[in-house]
Length: 381
Image (tube, rainbow, N blue to C red; front, side, top):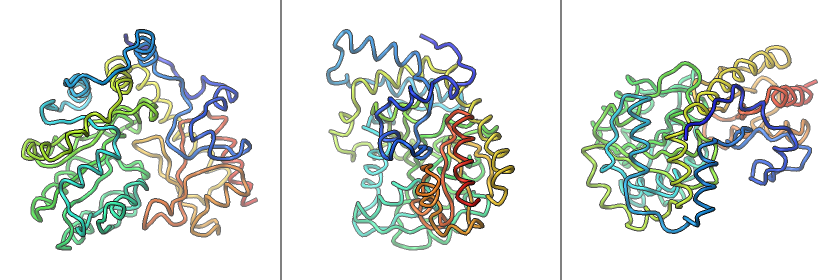
């Protein structure tokens, strides 16, 4: 069932309704702390997901998922409609979630002791992953605009121990949408060095800022992509994801553990397919609300915290704020939380280059964003 559009999804739920949620966003800190940190939206659920999950629970359809390509086909339909790209279901494998998929992909293309190259600052679990796998992390810088620095990537790839390049596309936390030309250049550099490329594309459908997302596998026949409906449709707690490989790397699917596909839950598959097939209106409304909020945050900062440097994100619903001129040290998020009672992500978590930055979740009401900036400004007042 297709959903009905909600013009401003982040203005629908009351503060009391949001506070009744029991996810980590609402339970990590004390009740007086305003939570704008973890990537969960303050939005009502997708109607088509509610209908599909409710039907599955009511009928007891809660067993093991069938070994078919329903999930991949649903994503392929989205890829064709939104990006003009053909995803081959035969070149995919189910997985529990994106982080599990990224780890398993890296495990296939690297060995203990190898190095993994990562442009940073970047989504913090990706920063922590290599060491947890017994690999060495090598980071390279982004440009001052937060874009991929191709020269820095080339230098990083020159390390003979680097066997994989890990990308976040669109980029979290900068909100940058990598261009086709940038991705083509990355693919050429990696191919020249014989380095595998693994790409986290979980934010692919959250591109509200006028940019155009380019699937990595639409520019090359070599690489591994991991994606999911969970981020765009706000259902991180309903697990399912997909690994897709380029035509030249189909053989890598055979090296993935046979049990990997069983990590995705039946309810997760039901929910994600329902989102992709019936959630277009909801997603379009969310993207429009994100774009409006990104501009609104800019107005708030210009009025109350003009020293903060901010470029509205072109993708994701996460704003990356440069607070280095505020005199709050490498971790301004700590000061904002302890003295302003607003929880943001610390830039230091995102690896080199994140010092003095904070990440703000803007998938919230204008009243919430206003209160957050007022609290942040009070730390400096």
